[in-house]
Length: 127
Image (cartoon, rainbow, N blue to C red; front, side, top):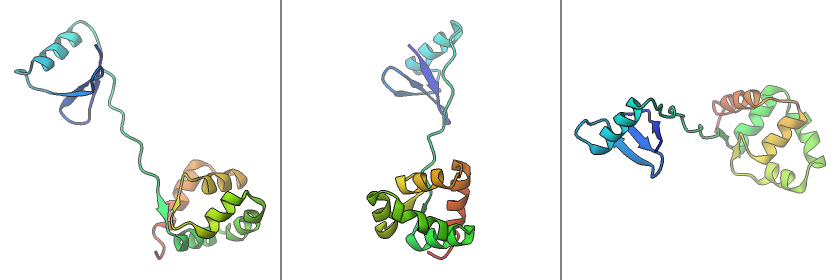
């Protein structure tokens, strides 16, 4: 049996993903405490990944302009795959982790942190 800590006051029993409350009257919690007393250590809490940032087409293009890379991106788009071209022309929302963005980031030597920062800026621009 193994367990995983949560951010709250429950423990997760890994075998069945049961959430066990920190209650001394709970038999499952007593079993957990006995398991710890035997020298076992629960897995640490790991926060779920954050949702990717998004931008509207206008925010996306304004952000590229503000970053000084819009003309370079628009020069590169016609040389990219048809899927990338279609995404740039017709997407109703841009995600920081979608194929267009990751391909452009690779093309322009941008790190994931730089892309994230650019999307943070894009979200502040006119929707």
